[in-house]
Image 1: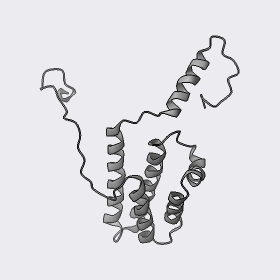
Image 2: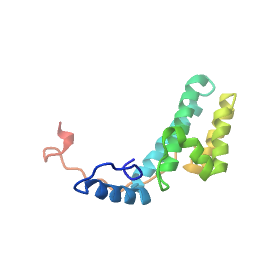
Image 3: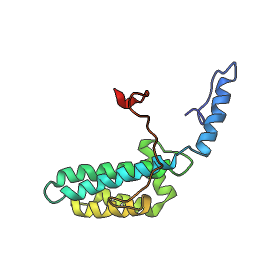
Length: 155
């Protein structure tokens, strides 16, 4: 809204400066690689949880599957510029920029049974995050302060 809206009053050019900054962020959104990996892992774990309960509790599985699909779509738009569309325009924007992925998403949304929905969502995950469940990942070494040296672990 800041970058594409209409400014009615800006006597000290503050909004002009903010608009330029916002346009830069839209052109090259900051996404830390470790944040991307963690998001992918959470999505894959939620999908795996759905598969774990699908036979004994299909309603819970559906909740997990729909959560997985939603988080996958947000992740898809977050890692590729220029922006995450408004919620009500998410699917139409996806249709415009990636019709094949849009088709996979709509297959999942229109599936009549939970197993078919799970398989359709799995195909979406294959494209967007490259995994359907647990996957190995590495993080940088974390250096913690010993107890008593001001670490938050002392509380």
